[in-house]
Length: 90
Image (cartoon, rainbow, N blue to C red; front, side, top):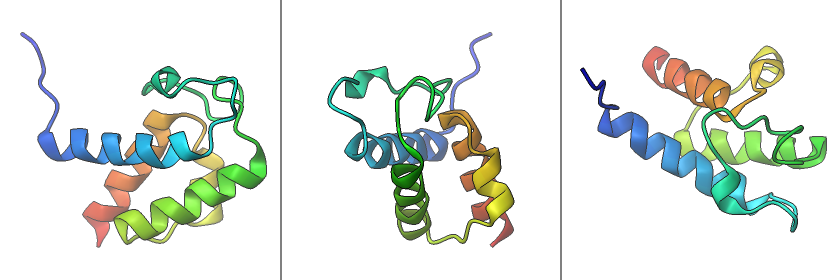
């Protein structure tokens, strides 16, 4: 059986991709962003831009991310999981 993604999850994923896309270096295409993409290793996002992504995520989803959340955000999927948890906890 095919497990369908929740439309809300899909919407958050698209929103997150749009945020990340803004900070991609010129040598990385937007369609390179997948759930399993590692921010620094595969998408070549530097630490300063990663901080900007975190700030944009906080604004976009109206959540607060702690240092340990940022440490846990290695991949797009990690970020999505943290966003979903924070929203659920509100």
